[in-house]
Image (cartoon, rainbow, N blue to C red; front, side, top):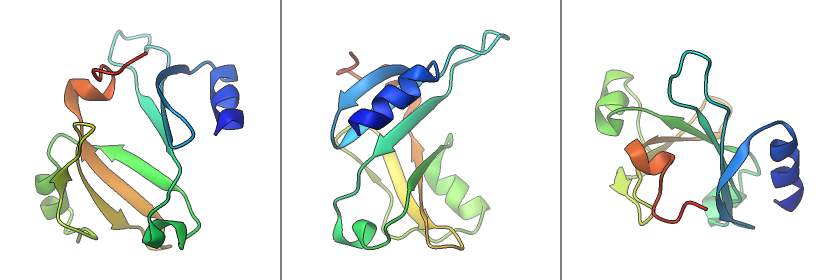
Length: 116
């Protein structure tokens, strides 16, 4: 994780959540149109089912997780739920077996109470 943090900072991303070695979140530079910057999260997996896949965990933010799953006819791996880090989320598999985490975080994505 430490090498990844240095790599993404070198690319110009700003570290906004540092829970290494388990999790880190970065913010991209603000877009020129004044819109809200995107974020990138790195998450090392320790759950048995995730670690056994030996692949990435990709995050997609949507406005409404349950509506998105329904509209796209997607079956989550488990029931969507609110997490302790204030994100409502559900995991799905892509066709290659990679995990995609569909989540809604709102302002907490960029401004969690523990932002550094």
